[in-house]
Length: 311
Image (cartoon, rainbow, N blue to C red; front, top):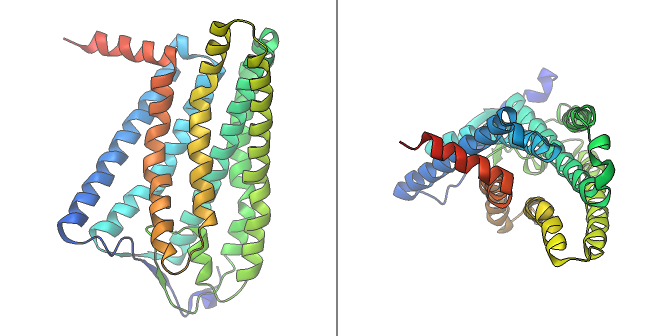
């Protein structure tokens, strides 16, 4: 980045939650830390169990393992610095650090969205084309799709990164958020603001819109196939294999749409931060829990593990 671009502003002040003070701030800090620790533990457990347990060596659990890995990296990107901001009642971050956090945040969000799309495709094959499912969704295709999600996420958002690195900041230097989200970060720039906002709008099409359309299309086909099953038990069994994924998709897209549909000005800043808190802290905890509780194989593995460790 050009040093002249940093002549006026060299770092930003993240306000975090200035309205939370005193013992409430301590309680809030401890609550976030506990949720973060639990989420990392649960996601790590999912990653390890899928890797070592033969009964979980199926495409659905392989992609769940990738999703847990994305969420673990995502949490580690946001939460430790967020805890620092809460503890210090606001903390500074360099321009380079802010750009890096905004870029990785967008890249991981893109990766997660495409992983959910791949998981929808997996459920489509399993229910709509069960006879050819194992032949199509083999190990090679699984690894290719997972690699595609990671590489595509980080490559596509490099367009945003190139714009972020060209931004100039003349002041103010205060970000009313608990991390460097792209939207409030761009609002502080003196140049390329409109161009970058337009770029983000355009790039949201392959990141969010197209995956959402593909997911909806996949599940329309799935529901049509399920309704065509003659037996009630067969329909119930088929629907149970995709119900957990539907729950995760609903939570993901509702929070993402809510975050970026709420304008970042005035009184709505607090609402935006609360929704972002839900998306960055609470949702990653719910996702592995939903999968663990709603999948019979995962429940069986967990039950067996706990019984073996019970004295």
